[in-house]
Image 1: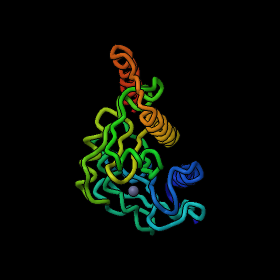
Image 2 (image 1 turned 180 degrees about the horizontal axis):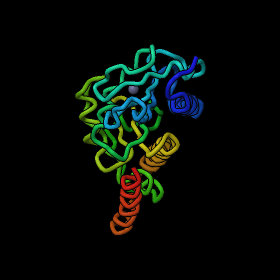
Image 3 (image 1 turned 60 degrees about the vertical axis):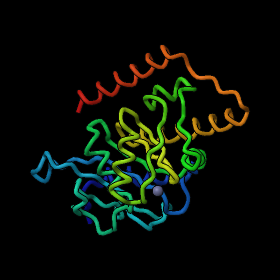
Image 4 (image 1 turned 90 degrees about the vertical axis):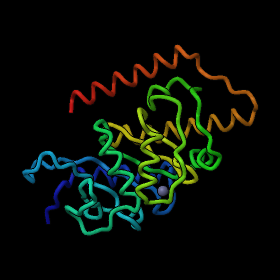
Length: 228
Ligand SMILES: [Zn+2]
């Protein structure tokens, strides 16, 4: 049996399994999505998203389990039930033309920051360049709700990562590789910040350095938008 978007679906499965093996989530929590082309449907402007299903273990997940939906979460292809956080993913794609992939994790130190309401100041050079600025924490909202999607998008504005209050984190990238790298970077940043905070001495990057690093991030983002 041939399945549509086979390669894209396989890449979503691979990224989800990598997310799990990196310890960024446990069980069936967390979810992964990828923007896919609708060209072969004769509707080139319809944005489609391939997303992990709810309730399937990552070790057993196959490309057939991946569900394709449009931005209104109408099913397009696949028999599984799309992730319970699909509204979060679709809202990000709706607002962010530069987002090619979205990964939502429950990684430990990002979740510690989520519980503490701990925004992360500019403390590590590479984190500013890959995330685009200090990391914000969204206002609390119920899991799976449109309110959560809206609150998280507000915290994500101009950045590639945000902490979801009392819940976890979300990261975006041009592709799955970048989104996963941002998740790893965010978790590392949260860990560094937590330990540094415990020591009682946190120094931040100079303002002009942060400005220059954010400019590098923006330049890359613009180049990506011009390519798409
Ligand atoms: Zn979650």
